[in-house]
Amino acid sequence: MATNNSINQPQLVSNGQIAIGGSGNNGVAATITAGTGVSVTNGAGSITIASTGVGSLVWNDVSGTTQAAVINNGYIISNAGQTTVTLPATAAEGSVFAIAGKGAAGWILQMNTGQTCHFGSSASSSAGSATSTNQYDSVTIVCVTANTTFVAIAGWGNLTIA
Image (tube, rainbow, N blue to C red; front, side):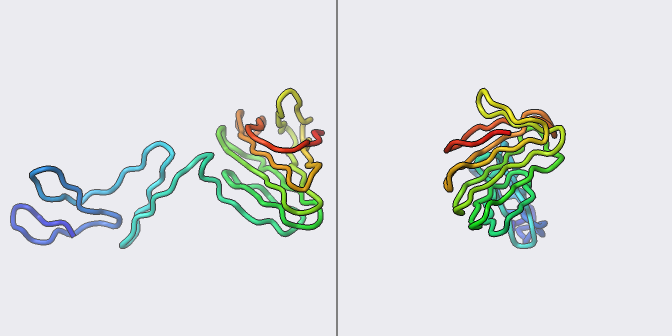
């Protein structure tokens, strides 16, 4: 709890506020402000700080044979059968998706109608796909034109592009 300087009494603070002070003065109740690549969530008695963007993918273990991709998420494919990961129909520029193989039969990255993905000098067809050829193939893609165009920014293995 911060102290009110004029009467030296406790000052009420809102969710997520902390005492922030400087040289020669007492702290004032204030909140932490998010900057580029950082999110701040204030709650009762808590402050949660998280990174956003490529370095902050949420990784999910996929044990089934289908997975609807979610923006800024990565998928570890652990099913023994081939797993299809389908991109969402709506993705803003800068949205990131990743797949890492682990299951023996690999994975398919499936685009929707009107969506294409570029892998170096190769590109999928509209509603095309990229298929792993090895158990441990991986790929990270980013949306470069909202909803329609994706580019592989990292990967490992030999993918079949259709």
